[in-house]
Image (cartoon, rainbow, N blue to C red; front, side, top):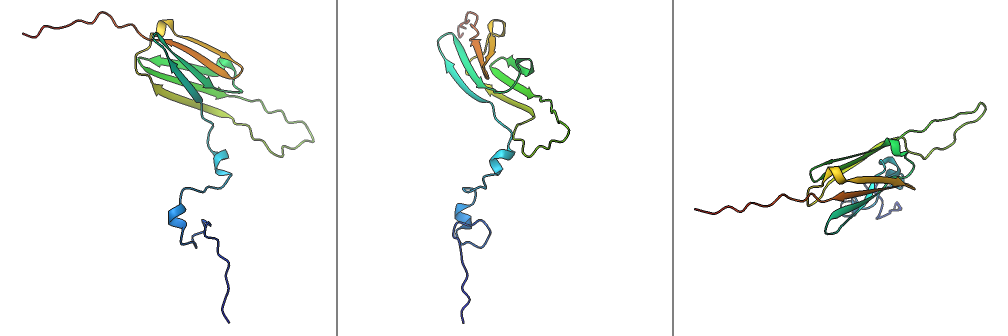
Length: 143
């Protein structure tokens, strides 16, 4: 009598001949929850400045730090949450994040740090970063 076995060609268990083809495409649903949250940004540019919108929900503005160094912009935020446990209660599930996130990126032109502005409202950090006006360019005469 022949042994009949059930096979799933999309299984990542190692028994599938398609495992090498599909490796890295399918991930268990729980893996995404293990990663730290990212700061999502939009960057717009006009003639005089850059406008950055950074999505940082659930953080107090005192815990957001922005630094500008030439054309590099760094944003970091720290989430603190007091945990109140009442007697006789038990936490069944907690999906909130505790910790620190950061994001750095480069802009095409240097930023004038002295005129830069930051505002945080409703979970959105808005940065207005004026472009640094280059001093007069000196043209050299070739001898």
